[in-house]
Image (cartoon, rainbow, N blue to C red):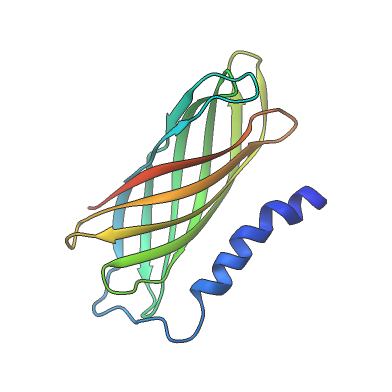
Length: 167
C-alpha cells in the first residue's frame, strides 16, 4: 500500500497544479486523433548497463475548453536493468494548454512481459511532461516517466523526449 501511495503522489500533485484556476483556455477545438512517439535513454548505475526504449501511442483527444483529456493505447519496448521488457496498455492523459505550451500528466495500466524470463504481470506507467506546439499538427516536448512491472525488478524512472503528430 505504501508503494501505491508513493507512485500515485506525483501524478496527483501534478493534476492539482494543472487544474489551478487561471489556466488559459484553448482558443479553438483541438479534438482529434494523434500519434505520440517517446524515445528514452536509461543511464547505467547500480551494476546495470545503458538502456533505452520507445513507446508509440495512438490517442484521441477531447477538447474541454480549458483542458484536454486524451484516451489511447500504447505499446512499449524497453531494455532496462539488463533485461528486455514489453508493455501494452490503455492510457489517460490530461493537458492544460497555456498558449503553445501544454503541460500534462498521464497514466496507464495494462500488461507487461519479460521475454527472457517469461515473467508477465500487471504493468503501470505514470508521466509528467510538457510539449510545445509548433503548428496545428506538430509538437515536441520532454517528459519524466516511472514504469513498473509488478513482482519483478523491472521498475525504472526515465527522462525522454516526446513527439506528437495530429492525424
